[in-house]
Image (cartoon, rainbow, N blue to C red; front, side, top):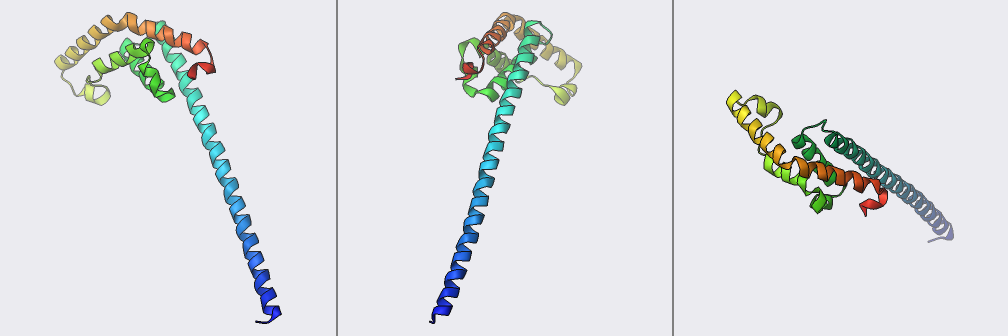
Length: 155
């Protein structure tokens, strides 16, 4: 092989390596950009969940929402924020109401019930609400207290 061919092959190899390095660098930048976007999305989702939780517990404490609906919403939001939160003793009333009422029909399924079945489900729901009202309101107050500690309360 002549030296000219060797130099041409060397130049082609250097150009290919440089092009691949540039491509790898651009891919790495894209991965970092996507990771930063994902982290920002997670942060915003957490913040939205915390704000929604604040609204729901506020409505519960002021009795602007049914105990059952408020409990369901609080349970779901606490699970979104951190699944271990629903296991805290001070928040377990939300899960208790959920577990005792989750078999009740909602939305379109409720509309398909006969008036008698609907009334029976309402009686059952109201009985659970009456029994659990003070525990749920205490849990809502505990959430407000927990939230007042700020971001450090999550860890």
